[in-house]
Image 1 (cartoon, rainbow, N blue to C red):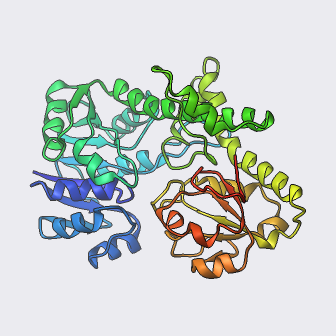
Image 2: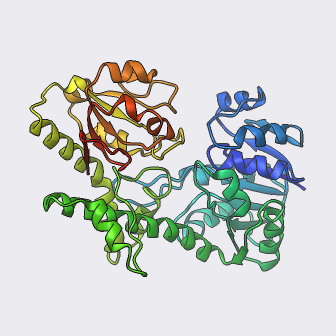
Image 3: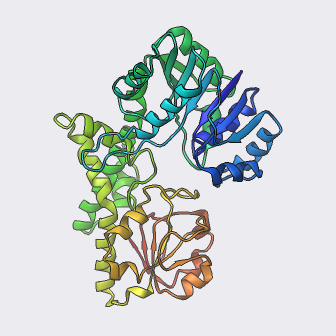
Length: 407
């Protein structure tokens, strides 16, 4: 069996490698020529636990990388799905473009599997019309499947193998064929259902998590207003056998939790209330962190922002993914003058993405006396003694120091 994986980013690349190391012949395609060249040089394009080892193993199997779409029987599309800022609806342009290009080269009877997260009804509203316009008939000339990814940066390889999967298909036999394909490496349950159900289940999984995070973040604001320790409150409340409150943090990032719930807000504005409120709470958390910082600086009579450092640029601990990161969201809230004064460091980021960014931790802490912890990377946990004498705003609750302020 031979497949063409379209999109070699955070999801597409590990998926292609996993297929290749489990007996499937794979061609990985991406429009980014530099990315493809890097892969063909035998190098991965982002850091992820176990990815380099999987990559080396895949190169010994049957995989190649190109910017060209291939003529195959099965296509797996894993491209970004942003949302439109104005109306919060999904922007399906990358998926549509990928499908249109597939239709230019594919054989009749090809199966197009969309892994990208999409809002309920996206395939009906945007993909089926494209196929019809090109003179193809779904279910006969082209078969559509939605198989949403369900993995998290930092643990992708394990979750690819062990998490359950959902396969949405028009025809049961096509669904079962794709189920068998994923079963080549997936040890979890693989459920076959209809396409719209598969679309909805992925979106609400991330929405559920967003709502729970928002509850914890809103608690942090209530407790701050009442001068209470939110972590102590949550710890005690969680002793109840049916309560499991999450920990608050500096915001929500990544391309899933911070994006997918907006699809439902955009598509159902007249009936979505809780989901919208949760999104607004989490989107507002970086501003809350800034307000907390300003209060701490005022309390300590500090006005020189050039002595303030931000630790952490990624959206999640121990990964190099900066998509929708709370730190970047927070920097956008600063005035131009403020933004040019704050110093920034993240051990996972090797190229410059913001002003006053440091690439050496010791130099970074030498130039500051106030630090905001935005990521609980293992790196900072191993270097706490170097910052213990600083004034600290710890948004991750990892530092026990007389100088550490919490959310």
